[in-house]
Length: 351
Image (cartoon, rainbow, N blue to C red; front, side, top):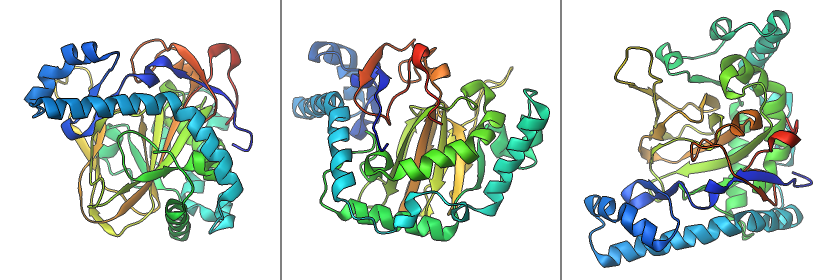
């Protein structure tokens, strides 16, 4: 993001999918009257029974609406300031190097690329399965895949860089509405040299093979951030889906207990119960899944967990249906890249 580019978001970004963390409820806010009529009874059933409790939630919603309206301008101002003032702890990790990657991951990416070259557009998912490391049998039934991405030393250095950035006094935005802890890699500036080439040179051949129906071969924008789970902050995450076509979740450390990722399995013909798949995190390993697949994070019981989250997007898919409002998107141009996509008449090959 050396020269931040304008993107577009769906208008729903500004008033829908607001998460009331205390009551584990996603809401849409248009005005106070609409909110009261639509959600007051539901909130009472969840324990928000007094006027004081209700007014507190309403005030937090007003604050969130204001934050969203100002988000992109604030993000851009912060990004410019950070590039001028932040002193990097590990400068070499700001540009992806082949040696930073687990050799098994580069082999998987190379195999995917060879399959695409040799087999053209023929469905290749079945052939790719034998090359995905640690898919754990039933994990593939959930169309979810786990494989090593970064070396352990790379994970350690990224985590140290994140901590260094978190502890500096430069103003930062919250990476998303559901997590209290974490930082935006886009705003920080780390994603430009680390995440962009990771997607373009290694991940996109894999996603093209595994997720052809979700824009796996046409990824053109993304949002990346780090989340932190600990007893002093977030310990878990409620059921939700991501603002992405494909999500990559990379664990950066191992000194924690539990905190597994659980996902709803896609339903098949004749099945009534979706079922749930639980996948443990492993240092350096990434979990790849469809962003529109319902998932949640189970509570950690000890330690601190750091994960890189990459929401990868395909404007080709997204212009047909916004995953957050489930409608054809109403486009609103914003001032910086990192949280949007491109309209049909101006698709950009960023990746």
